[in-house]
Length: 242
Length: 208
Image 1: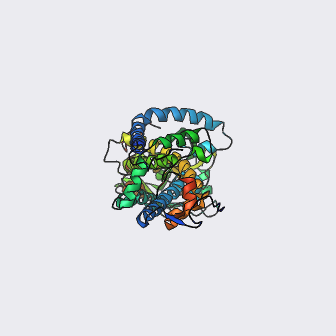
Image 2: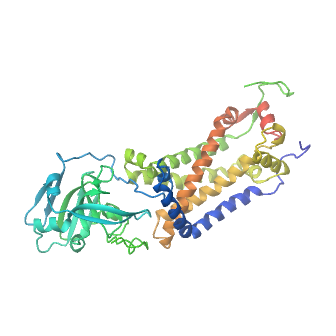
């Protein structure tokens, strides 16, 4: 053992180097992130497909959906107690049950889902009633400009302009990934706005109100873009989804 | 605890290791880091997110704890004892190289692990976690105030933030695990003093 090192006041400042080195690596990581991310998504995507434990799902960009809810708790509704109310500037306000919605013509779309926080799930099937069909059935009055969506979590809201809402790739979705939509994914009924970031696809949809102007939704009042086209909003350049 | 009496000092003699200010710096930093880790887990692990919900509140708590994380250390700079210990943590002597080498080859013999007030592992950890915390703070701010920077940066910041969070989680678990395995080290941070025995055994080159 050393005989007399009398404490290390005069040693090499390795601590400072490790500290600055970590900062430098962080900065380098920022610059290299787009490249690294593409590579990792490829590798993890391939691994996740064959991973029975689901552990890869816990890794960043490990693929799959992530659960976001803004409410403390969300009631579970099913065929007996679920209702979708259509009102506002329409001639024939109407309340649909789950059975009513299932009886209407269904449309199935298979497109990528893109979240504004970066994750993307390729080729996800959604199936449900075209929103435009419901609007036509209700008879939108002249002067109507937009739709305000409400949810039975009691908190979340969304919006679309009337033109956006009439697009054929906007559904009141009953099925996702060829299964009835589970509670965690916003079931039994959620909105599906294929060409926009996924926060527009409100979960737990319970109300469709036709309005004379756009009322920004929950995340939009917190700074997200109202017209949330994938790849053309929120400062992102993702591949469009629809 | 075995009290082998090969030390000349009376068994039970206590040595001052940390001042009150230093203990509070550690305590508050640990609490804030704990909040960051728990809220991060809630935001990140779907099962927990399903249980807790309230996403906006959890995000806000995470942001506040993250912003506050460096504050105790910055306030601690007012304390002379803390500054002195920072200098000890920064400076590496020849014995630290011996310690690191022994750690790399998993040599656990006392004689091959010479250490001053802090061993080389503690020094590397302190420097790295300080740097990592600032990287987390920087990338966190980029994700928070998205309109301050070119917006392409947000995805990059998220990427760095996520992977570094995972790394910090693992390293932090090691830090806590080692503390759990050494009650006297924990007593040092709780009461400020350690036994002379422990100091001699774990930090033979430390001259308190």
